[in-house]
Length: 263
Image (cartoon, rainbow, N blue to C red; front, side, top):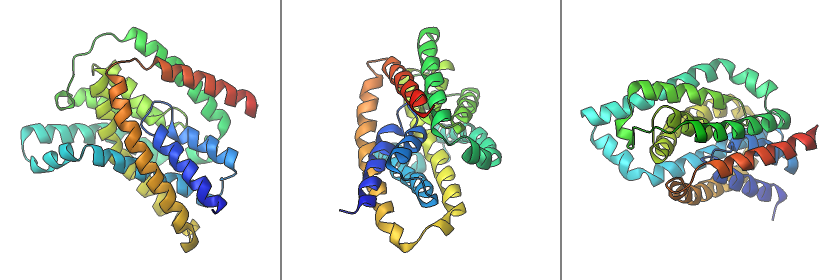
């Protein structure tokens, strides 16, 4: 089997496993790509593309909710839910549009990822112990103010290694959502956020692609989709029973190892 196909499959697994866990998929892809020697301009575009596979796993998992949302367009409940997603989406879209090039050029490296992993792990520990009061157990009951607060929290994930899932889930918990509601809102918010980010990145980098890249992209996409599907199901079961402390420990240990290795 072609070596590049194997690398694509491995990176697809990394993306699928890490995208919706609070451990940073972007950070892990940067590190995995560096270890595998998969760091060309095509590789960077590939890493963006396979995120679509992961996000389509969420679309598939919540297809009934998404279908009912479209059918309910015009109703107060559906309008409120869609408005909240838009409100939460806009801050990261705004800041990402202006900071995208700077972040890609200066922050996409193993050392900054390691620092963000450690810092984020400490933040998870603190939030788990400080935040005790939850008032929202259903994503349909999220208020516009809470949606905006979660959206502002999501902007932190523009820094590679922070984790979009981690920023939105922990942010949602800080602003009154129960653990499962926070996780589900993060999943739904990922749909417009990741579609917008990946579409923007792909359009900017189409010139780096060729027909010969198609098999690599297809393999990465499919592996990302199926591995994400498995992880989403398992993660939803996990959050109803346990805290996020184990992810905090993982982030701190892994980030420390990476930091010492690259320094």
